[in-house]
Every structure is written in structure tokens, then in C-alpha cells.
Length: 119
Ligand code: SF4
View 1 (cartoon, rainbow, N blue to C red):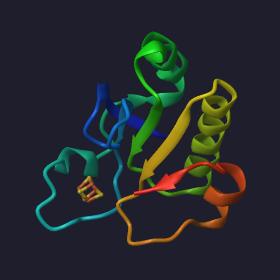
View 2: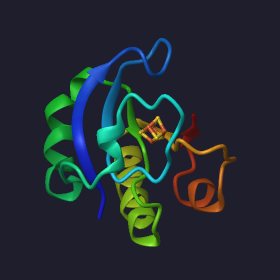
View 3: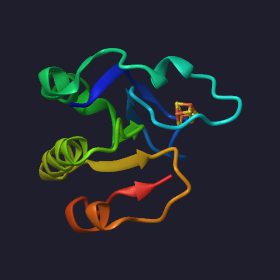
């Protein structure tokens, strides 16, 4: 289950775009000089209980949903994120994912998320 610490609108993450930025906790990485170490913990509320309300509340104020983190990277978490992404695309918005990993576009992103941009 994905937990989120906060959600807000920002123009910093994607140049020239307004993003609905959702900070996901349970980060599995320990980047040097991490400034959001609270995201290493199981911190925040279950995203599944609030995602639709957040998305609809801010709908007119963003172009892209930007997930900052991907939780525990379990199959369950990936399926949950895939479902959000399908919903976001169905509502004519785009998705970006900051994985925190040195990675490429993986099959689960490519096949299910299609328009995800790995940052
Ligand atoms: S991915 Fe982000 S939250 Fe996780 S350790 Fe790195 S900088 Fe910190």
C-alpha cells in the first residue's frame, strides 16, 4: 500500500508545466544528502483513500501528476501506481515518476503506464 506524506501544486519539478506533486514515503533508497529523510519511514496516509479527492480538488490547476517516490517497490505498490496512472490518463492528464533509482523505463512502466517519464 502506497503512503503519501503530502500533495501540492508546483512549477519546479517539470519545466514549463504545473505539477500535482505527491510525496510517497517508504523510500527504499538512502541517497547521499537526502533532504527528505522522513520519506524513508512508513509516514503519512494511505494514498488509496485520498487520491481521487486530491486529484479532483486540484484538477484545474495542474498538467501532470508527479509521483515523488515509488514506495516499497513491491508488486502491490506497482499495481496500485499503475491503477492511478490509468485513471490519470483517462482524465487527460500526464504522469511523471521520480523513482530515486538509477534506472531505465522498466516493463511495468512501459507496458502499463505508457506515458510515464522517468526522472
Ligand atoms: S529517493 Fe528521495 S527520499 Fe529517497 S533517499 Fe533519495 S532523495 Fe531521499
